[in-house]
Length: 122
Image (tube, rainbow, N blue to C red):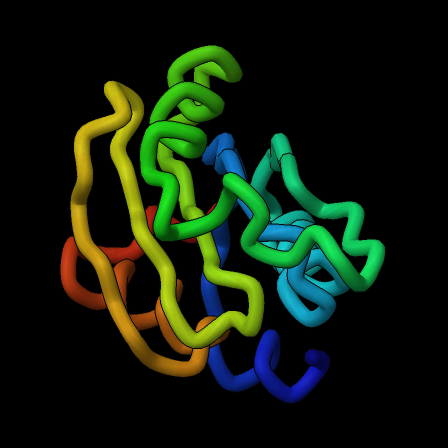
């Protein structure tokens, strides 16, 4: 994760991000911490994997969950991963879908921000 943070220099200070980690092992273990380390305020859900609840009524195949969480938390953006982290759905502060991507999840934030422009560094 340290290499990722050094090679994908994002400053997310001032950004509130909602996450649906789909109770996946990798996404639950790393997603919230990564976004926090990059400066974002994080509201995380479905981040308690027990070996049986992965993707269980959550994650990128249940977009209504991240849409609701993003709006209720007052987040600027929401990301819903699938259980193994190879898909992500992004929504805006109104819960409207921005993009769905199927790639290795840590690169998604970089691609997303490079597409719309990185927040200013502080």
